[in-house]
Length: 125
Image 1 (tube, rainbow, N blue to C red):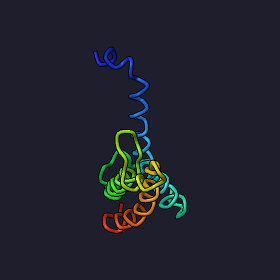
Image 2 (image 1 turned 90 degrees about the horizontal axis):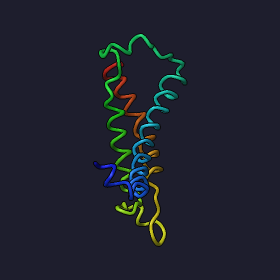
Image 3 (image 1 turned 90 degrees about the vertical axis):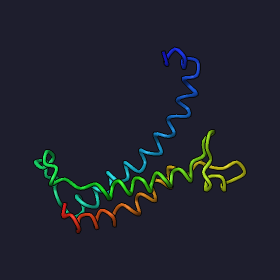
């Protein structure tokens, strides 16, 4: 039923929905890449694939969650969409500029490593 009602505006729905996906995928990929590079590749610590069915040995995920939320909040203040303009985006140029993804990447990239280090020290996993 919804597909019949939205068939004439599908392109508009995609134009409004797909940028939202970019705003959450940027912090997510930043966390995944930093976890891999900073906490596994540089210290030459291999992945232990045998622990992925044991919840007690997996990371808690608090650092990733908090970093993601901070990154997404950064995306919100920097987004420039037809239905919303963030305060930082509104300051750019005459009409505004969409820097939400870059703010999300930057804020997540800065906050995740120290939070993950604290998580490793406190929970040792």
